[in-house]
Length: 207
Length: 207
DNA sequence: AGAAAAGTGGGTTGTCCAATCCAGTTTGCG
DNA sequence: CGCAAACTGGATTGGACAACCCACTTTTCT
Image (cartoon, rainbow over all chains, first blue to last red; front, side, top):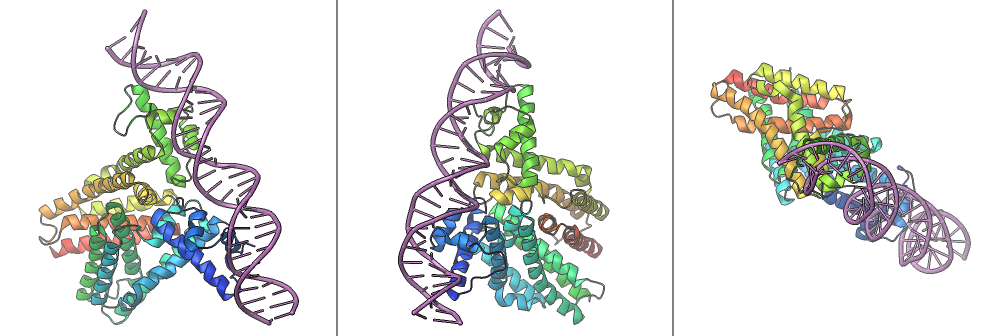
């Protein structure tokens, strides 16, 4: 039976298989988009047999939603300790360098695993759109924590909103990733992040 | 016969019909994405008969590329005179208000007509990806002209790069639009643009 | 007037793919 | 052990859709 979104397989092996399917789907959808990825591709990549995909997911949409949640975890995981060090200008710059280098390694392909997926399904699947929005909000939250810490230490002007700065930084990052994907060049990402970090740095110098 | 990308129909009527097809495709793809838009939908919306789509376009991909070029024109056209007045902080703020209001009118649906389309096809159609990149570069060019004028008048510090500022502003706009689309709320767009414009304004005050 | 282009309206073909079903086997928890 | 879940490896259905073809009419350019 196909499970609903929240129910998890009961056994360890079941959870692992489910996870293999999601990971395979995430990889293929990142590389080729949702529409170009067939359940048969996913089945083969995950190394499971015919009926297993439908054993764990009601339909393709349910799988897409699971992939978005998976990518949200993966994105935060990939950035690792960088996200814990966004409370200094040096930490922010190191994070920026990491993101740029990561895109370079990928050949500027794929864009943001959450943003690109979310954009593709935003107007056709409200639940998937909300899952993507939730993923980005988690990311934004990590940036916000760093900037709030700087603010609390008085390193940012009292009237400056660390929350707004965090949201703006994530937006610049998303736009930079999109343009980097389209142009196959890390320059947009570099310039977009540098502009935001320069702004944050100049605010610290004003405080 | 299906024409290649550059050849245009010879008669006025032919150009109009071709344009009607592209406009219908643009509207439907903006609302539902490329994958969810069938040639039959387009044919019906454009009000043309069976074989006409293939009379003007070799295949769906060719039509998608035409739609991207069409949207690039439409986006610049929609912003009208605002793009001629990006050489003052007041002009930039008015432009920002216009963009936010435009999203509000659309119910935050669809995102950027160029960016959303480009992202969907970026990894499957290199020509379409490049068409989207070209469209964004035209947009960036209009922003750059404004900032270059400010720079030439000495209203921006000599060491500040108006070119980089323009690219960063468009990236912030793109990311803001994406997040606004996903969250169905203009806040990300507002905050992203405000952050970039605040940065530009503070640079003018430093100069 | 004559030719080329634009257009109608329909049919057709072939493929792809999501989704469902099933008969049987293996695994693993209690 | 016994039962339920996990899993295999198919087959199959049904629909959607891109792409192509055609016989014929209307419009437009020269």
